[in-house]
Length: 494
Ligand SMILES: *Cc1c(COP(=O)(O)O)cnc(C)c1O
Image 1 (tube, helix red, strand yellow):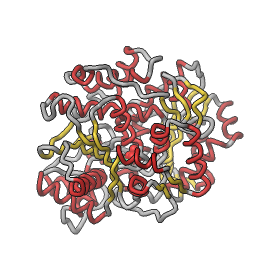
Image 2 (tube, protein in one colour):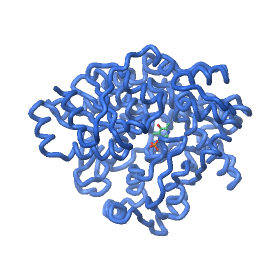
Image 3 (cartoon, rainbow, N blue to C red):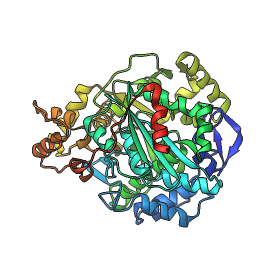
Image 4 (cartoon, protein in one colour):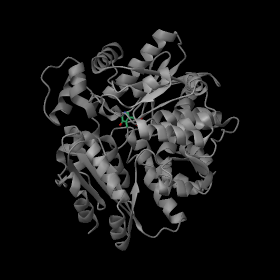
């Protein structure tokens, strides 16, 4: 399997190069040359497999240079019982007759980023070995919350890597901050940046492109690498759980072989829903892909009007991991819809110059054939949390609630009652305050005490990784100005 840039299909890369490099030299995203079709009978075959084996089966289709033995080792390390609190790894819970919820938050950080970030370090270090790279990877991450902790857990104590996470000092929740500053491992570092998420991200990008800094690193035996969601090594493990969910529904006789299911995904950077699209391209009988957004509804507008326009107000919402106006992974979908990297390059040039682009009529029609877009505000998000809890005894987080709202709107508008898999991306305990408020609590406890309050209100225990934060030592208290982020890098590398 060869990989190409979304902006230039003439140069080919191997899978190891695509994963090690992260981004193409022309600024495009490295993407498979084509999406392989699953062999006939594959879904039936996978019905009886454990999640880990399904992962090997799917990933192998894209990673010819990796052996089954290698991938099997990676999958059992990434998705084993020390990491995930259920042997199903990504269980499907049936909410009502034709609504199923795919829970992706049973990993070590209680958010869906674990599904990819537990696998990425294995893929990355093996790729470096295959490319005979001898230096150590220094992974820099700017985070608005979930990615930072997910990457720290994924890369902790992974040989030949160091990881440094920057988060905005006042831009993450108390639980998220505690998760990061108590991180264990000998190769990790965490620093708060005075400023917002954009300041942290801009600072990281500046370090990556600073020649003098890169030279300094090289002399010390390091090179910069990234773990953000445009790396193919993060998208690929996400395809697996869509295939797996379909196999579970088959196995449990909730659907018939070949029966179509829709998928509804709470979306920010477009990585998660793109993986669902690829699963469909592989031959999983997925019908509509329902793209759910919060008040930052740039994708809803794109799907409805064909115009992508990020010149608009940015809102902080109670589903912060979806507070995004630049959905990077959309570029890969454009390549798939156009089959023309030159056209993608033109759209991206327009986006860079004006913050906006408009799809041709043909493309818009193609997009609408596959996708439906819906959005909701915080008030509706809380209404849905309450309704799911009162009506089904099912406690969901704010991001998942946005998806359930989108599904409700979709069904009301279209009357399409096709079975649907709604993707649940975080444990409700990660966003305690908003969930408690939705359940009608007026006085919300501070910090970790909110976990106990949610347990008292619902009778459900907090996930162990969150409850356990109480006993952890704070290991990192460095706060840097946005122009001094290099100090944190030097402190980590010595
Ligand atoms: C990252 C994240 C999302 C958005 O996922 P994308 O792949 O960026 O679309 C949704 N929910 C939660 C809880 C997340 O952490």
